[in-house]
Length: 130
Image 1 (spheres, rainbow, N blue to C red):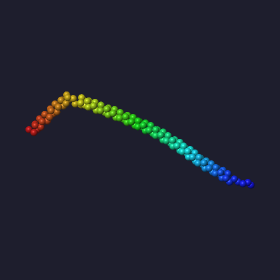
Image 2: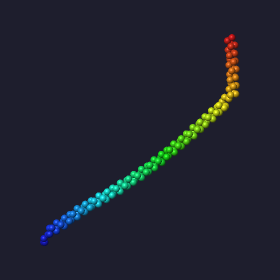
Image 3: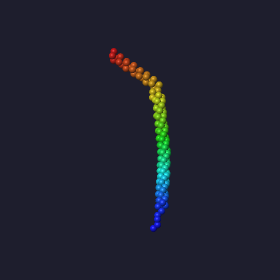
Image 4: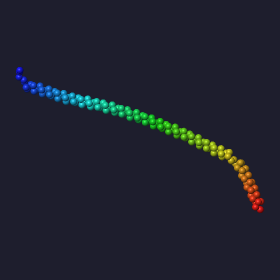
């Protein structure tokens, strides 16, 4: 058997060891870099989904607020119309009452009849007491 060249063997072993350690360091660095990129992609994806959901929520809330405002406007319009109708009916009724309930001529006739009745009652009382 021949002699081994221990120096050459030590250099080759050292070079292999350094190559292995270097490969391990570079592999870990690449894995870390790819892992960070993957995390960033996932983070960006979630942030995009969150932005989309927020925008959708804003649109839905604005639509709901507009629908509510439209409903309130409709109710206010209906109540305004109803109250105006009631007021108009009251005014018409008041006018009809003032015109036709007890006219001046009718009141004058009533008053004269009332006075005549009172006179007759007074006369009857004075005749019965005297």
